[in-house]
Length: 448
Image 1 (cartoon, rainbow, N blue to C red):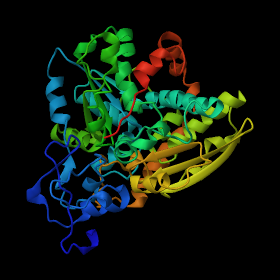
Image 2 (cartoon, helix red, strand yellow):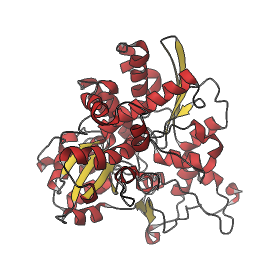
Image 3 (cartoon, one colour):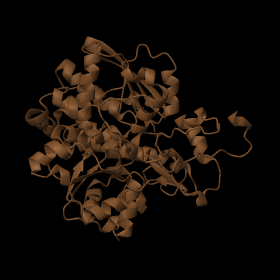
Image 4 (cartoon, rainbow, N blue to C red):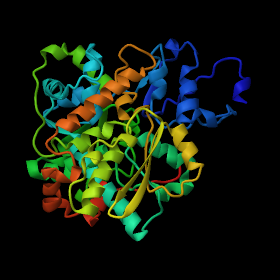
């Protein structure tokens, strides 16, 4: 049916879309948005332009990355956050995703993939942040919880295999929308941002003697779909624990593009930003947490930890550079043996590719990582496009290489070796999959 259309198809946008917006006056109806949504994301392929038919956008924003006129953009939050910073009653806490630090400098014309962590933190402080934390810590926590869940499935059959990752909100929404019959396969672990927000308003607030009702938790991400994720009714668990029903775990999402735009509006140039470090507690994570931004990174980090748990010793060097899970292929397969267990993993980016996997033979697989965006979060729709549409692979590869390079230089490269991870379990959570961990760090998914 779609091939019979003479005029290029464009995505119909709802004004209620919480992730992306469109300026119809700028649209040339070139059809690039629908093409990427159809071929790589797989949503457009399901749409038949029937009267009254809803376009079930998953918020990934890859249409924005394909739009040469910039008619489609992420729905901005930074102006709201800017006003909240001016409110002396508010405590504004930013948490930065791994990929932002390898995309931020791109927005100022630097070499794509430049690692600009300290400049990113410095920029947030200059913009008025009260605290700047690192989601890389929560990525390590995700490995502890998701890895423990995987081991439980493998060793006790507590839930079906393979287990799918749940870090990517666009992928999760895609799964909920078109494969609700398989939801038992997806990990119950929240995304790192989901975990970070819940802990900021509970553990962090307690440690720092902050009133959680005054905290504004802002996630700085490469991802437009996070704007939908933070609005999920399920992600208000800090409020449940504290008896504050209206308390959201995360309040706003500022993308890398928004951060760059905000800096430029305030006259901040990356060459003149005073570099700074993250605040203590929920601060920097390990190399394993850092590579979460890359396709295959979640899988590699998880296997490092699974190896140490089962073998009770550090992984061999090959587990710290697991070549089968790396690269820009949209589907990769890796097989490893740990403590006598042969584990088969699949790494996928693009929900259309994930759909083909779900409709195929999944038997024999134990763990499947899915990210929506090409190359992983490093190519999220909230990242600068380096003045090229669509973003070329060399930009993606540069960003990927920068995160792997940081991993190689890290003091700790296995998530379970992070001293702050040990501390938060000792002081607060007790152990992975504990009742408190289940409340704050896990969630449920449902048919959409």
